[in-house]
Image (tube, rainbow, N blue to C red; front, side, top):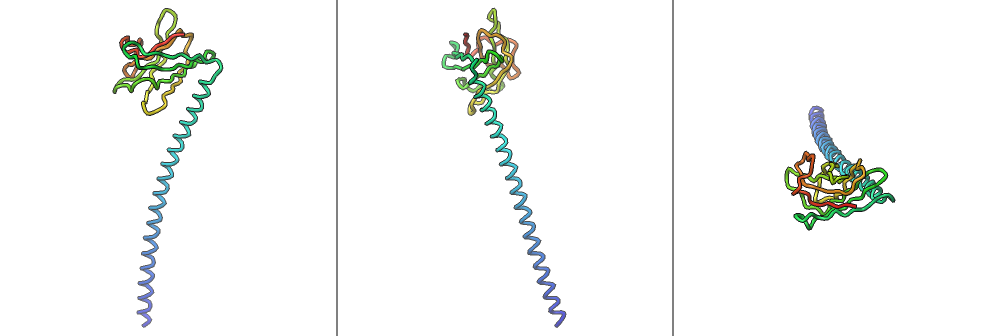
Length: 172
């Protein structure tokens, strides 16, 4: 009789251990899932925080008292395009609003240019235009431009704009 009771207690103990072990395993999996979801949410939050800071900085940049606004009109081949340039004359910073440009084809990007004395073009760099985003780009070291232009170039950019690929340009 004593052995039967011991056998029953051992069986109950083994079943209880098995039950609690499976519960612990489920809790561990749930905790790992929760930790993964936390990392995803934290990553999304960090991206949103960076985007907010960029937008806040951009707004502060275009609201400067020393800014000059230039509307870049589409060239004859691209008449329905436009862009806006906010040129901060003291810090020589350019904010470029490219929302009036079409999506670039694969393997190409837009390149910003400053037009200086003698009508020469100097590159301000290529920028990654994304049609589903607010496309305001900041460029530094614009000297004393007479105007600005944007052309479509290969992703690495060009030393001079491809003349038949100048989408927009404008001068003071």
